[in-house]
Length: 234
Image (cartoon, rainbow, N blue to C red; front, side, top):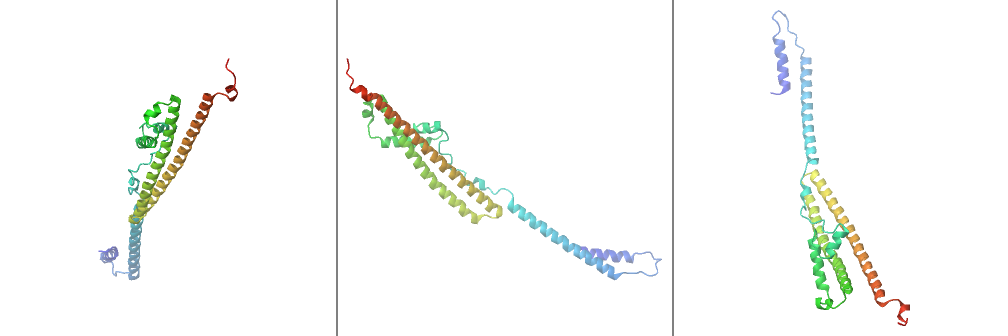
């Protein structure tokens, strides 16, 4: 039974149950009608408030909570580049460390790019052997870094494409917002990797400059000064 009907019935029963000593029962029909209308209005307002509350709860649920988007691409290799000079030198020398893949690529490149055989290399002076080994490692490191960067960039592009495609499958606004935030985070990490890769390239170029300087100094030390070449030996 509706609230308005119950209230009207209660008012009528109250009027009818007045003491018997009353000669005339006065019923204000207009007041009862007005009271019933007020109850109906309050009932409508209550229903409206309930609907608004339900809608607000639905909107809140669509904008809060976890949608699990942080778990997407969870197995993607992101930290594949050395983060310090010591790690870079270790990878260049073929040491596994924390970058076994990069070190393995360096060792493979050194072996593939070598022209002199180990027997021919053993016939050279120790200083020359060290210079050749350092030059091989530096060139191999550049090649390995380029290969790693290309492979990871291609994989990350495919991962970003999968995130973009997942936007259309998001069930609510929160899911879309989480996906957009995830894409932005991936782009930021990819940009950071590009910056880090450029710094590593600069570091390898600096190492090449050091090798060239050492070669020049060793050549001068081996030939002696120009003035001393023509000085007669007693």
